[in-house]
Structures are given as structure tokens and as C-alpha cells.
Length: 273
Image (cartoon, rainbow, N blue to C red; front, top):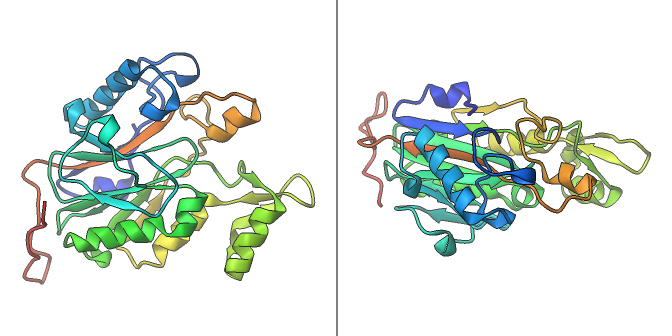
């Protein structure tokens, strides 16, 4: 488990960016693979998810993740669901204590959010497609719909592919820079004149910063380079391997947590469930 300081300061909230260590899966999925869509044995995935939930002080049945599609779609969670009932979404938000919401990643950016005064949390899976489509903005907007304020939200960016490991081609570079010339800040020269290195966490971080949140913290961890601790789609692809695990990032409101008065204010109404 890895945590970020800004979210550790938030009372009534627990969170974790889990590594691949401490599970029961084997081979390419060793060992804490939490993704049902990975091709791993479902029983082992279920056991891994139960172990992760236990680390957060919960039963395995209290963990909700979605069927991720690299979209800007967000689901509001008021209870966990079975794998076959998981919604298609890349963001989850809730104001319900005791339910852990999580995202799965293997190089994409996991982002966890909390507004402690409102008693609202969120989780987003931001690959380049989802980030470009607006998943972090959509997640914050959904939190606001439950009573949060942007200025009260703390966000943590977890382990993902680092800027020195994510090589892309000229078409990728051209699309981003054509959309916004300022995106050139996230590209560096690659191994040849036609290749570039892309800073995905930097890109996601700037989009978060534009939302004027209370705080944004980035973990300086490269999932591609750190094979001992993290799964990586691009590392597996480079080796011609089709199988790879998915790491879990999750956040939960403690039981009894909920909206409370903000400093200097009259508080916020209860969040719907």
C-alpha cells in the first residue's frame, strides 16, 4: 500500500494505492491482481480484492469498481455490486460511508479525491483517452453534484507510467499539440526524430490544477519501470506478453462520516445516497 500525504490529512477517509505484492495470483498476474477482466482466475481475483478491502478495514463485498472503457463516464455509488453488474464508467463517486470505490490500472493514472467537509469521495481512471475526454473534470463535477465544492477537494495521483517511459509516435503528438499548443509542455524527444516521450501524469495534473482544487499531490512512481511493485500494460506489450495484472487504487469514507460544517460556514446539506 502507498498513500499520499494530502489524503492522509483528511479525517474520516482511508485510501490506498496498492502495489502488486501480497496477493494469491501467480505467473504474469503475481500477486495482488484485482482486475476481473485480466484473464486471471476469478477466484484468485476475488481473494485479492478481499485482501485489499481488509487492508482498508472492510469486507471484500464492500469494494466497488467499474467496467472501465477509457471514457469520461462517471457513476454514483450507493452500494457495491457483483462483477457482472459493474457499470461502464471510468469515474466513481459516493457520499455513502463504508463503501470503498476503486479504479484499476496498469500504467493509466489512478486519481483519488476527497472533500472531507462534504463527506464525498471520488476515484478516476485516467488513461490518455479518458484524460483527454475529461474524466477528471467529470468526476469532480459528479462530486459537486453530491454536495462537494471544488475548493474543498483534495486529489492524489497514484502510480502510473512515468514521463521517461511513455514513448509515442508523431500522430499522437500532433493530435495533442493541435488541440492545445500548451500541450507541447508534456512532450520530450524520444529515441528518434519521430518519437516522443509523453508525460501522462503531468498532463492529468495540469487538468486537475485548472479546477482550482484544495490540493493535488502526485506520487513520483513509474509503473513501467518498477516491475517489482507494479503491473504495466506497456511493459507486457513490449515483451509480446498478452497477460498482465491490474493494480487497485481505492478510497472509503469511514462509517459515521458525512457532511460537517465548513470553517466559517453553515455547512452543506446531506449528500443523497
